[in-house]
Structures are given as structure tokens and as C-alpha cells.
Amino acid sequence: MKPLLYLISLTIILLAPFYGQIPIELYNLDNPTTIDYKLFWDIRLPRVLLAFFAGAILALGGLIFQSLFKNPMSTPYTLGVASGSTLGVAVAIVFGFTSLLSLFGFLGALLTVFILFMLTLRLKSYETNALLLVGIALAFFYNASLMILFYLSDESQSFEIIRFTMGSVDVVGLSQTLPLVLTSLTLLFMSLWYKKELKLLLTSNDYAYLKGVEVKKVNTILLITVSVAVGVCVSLTGPIGFVGLIIPHIMKSIYKQSAEQLIVPIFFYGGFFLVISDLIARNLGASSDIPIGIITAFLGGPFFIYLIMRKR
Image (cartoon, rainbow, N blue to C red):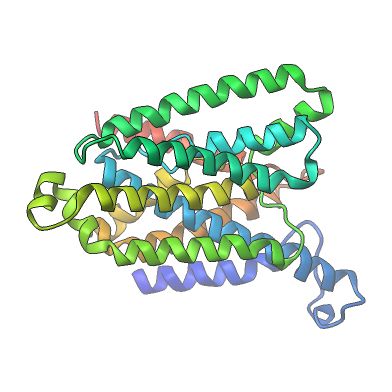
């Protein structure tokens, strides 16, 4: 069952670049002068790669956050990193730096990570939930700042900000996907490197401490790694919700294994989920592609309610 599920998922991912509102002729893919060549290599393939690695980051980030905070409702956006990145993009739009949107988005996320890191230096190892509350407070502050920018912006700027907050994997050229690919692989490597510590932390911080784990150090490294990865992701795609909530819980119900054994499956199926969501978004027959964040919200909203009722 599980190998077959992998095979089916991998097949869908490999076929995803060939499907869209405009059909592609396979015999034109090696001819740089054709529209099919440009459509496949410059738009479709980079879009699928961006969707896969963005989904992988969000899903794996969700697993790590839920493990560290011992909270099944935690997501990669919990610490306000996504809100900081969105605010950075909004600043760039309103003040005329539209050519540097990704840079401003990343700087907004990086500023949030710096604030969180400085706060972790003052927190004790068992005060992880305090950091969670700080993240929520930062998110509210960023959202209030975003409302001010909406007030200062004109109609076109407001539309551009709203469009960004809906999430999108529109991209042109493979070079734009490279930062996300490298970031996602780094996150995967760090998660596998600390999987033994993660297993002990799942029991309790005190138990991990007794087993020789430097709880505060490991928490800080993993939280900063995930936050930076999410910052890079959000600066390129906008905030895409619910991936980090849905995929870890689905994988736990399928595999029935401890979290540290699910790192690679969650990485893979997080990417697969966002590729499927993108396929739906660009094949609904609308005049333009539906923002992928809307698709994930439609799928994630009912699932979130189900989780609340199940954990009640």
C-alpha cells in the first residue's frame, strides 16, 4: 500500500507540468523556438518545482512545530514569520520597491527571526509556550501595521497586496526556484540531523534533558531553521495556509509511527499536496489561475474543524 502510494504520487508530480489550460505538444519540448518549449521549461516546470518544495517546507515545518510545542494545532506560521514576510512585501509595494518584493519579504521574515532569537536568549528551556505567545503577539502587531499600509496605499497597490496574501506559485524560469530548493533541502538535512533529539523532546523537555539533550539549544536551532525556511518560502509564494496542519496529521494516521520516523514522508507528501492543489488551481477553467492559498484554505478549513472536534 505505502510503496504504491509513493509511486502514484511520484507519477502525478512528474505528469503535473504537462497539464494546464493550454495543451502542450511533446514533440516541441526540444525546440527552443516554439511556445510549447517556453511554456514547459519557463513556466510549468518551475511552477511545479516551486509548489513541491514550498509544500515540503510547510509540511515539515508543521511537524517540527507540533513536536516542539507539544501542540497539534501549531503550524509554520505560528511564530509570526509569515506575517513579518507579508508586511515586508507590503512595504515594498507601497513605497515603490516592486522589483525587490522577494528581498523585502525575506527581510521581514528575517527581522522576526532575529526578534524571536533575542527573546529565546532570555527564556528558559521549558518556556517554549511563552515563545508561542510572543509569536502570536508579533502576528497581531504585523497585521495592524498591514492595515495602516492598506490605508496609505492606492487601489492598485491594495489589490497587489491582497493578491500576494492569497498565495501563488507563479514563477518564470528555473533560477527563481533555486533558493527554495536549497532552503528545503537544508531544512530536511537539519531535521534528520536532530531526529533523535526530536524523538526525546516529544516525550517531554525534562526527559530529553535527563537523556543529555541541550533542550534550549536544540529548540532554538530547529525553530530558527524552520522560521528562516518559512521566510524564504513566504517571500516567494506568499502565505499558503493549512499545509503544515493537514499533512503531518494525515501521515501520522497512515503510517502510525513516531514523528522522527515521518520526516521524509511528510517532506514528500507536503510537496505532493501543494502540487495537487496547484493542478486544481490552474485547471478549473477560470479566465485566470485561482490563487493556490484559496484551494488549500478550502481543503484545510474543514480538516481544521475536524481536528478540533477530535481533540476536544
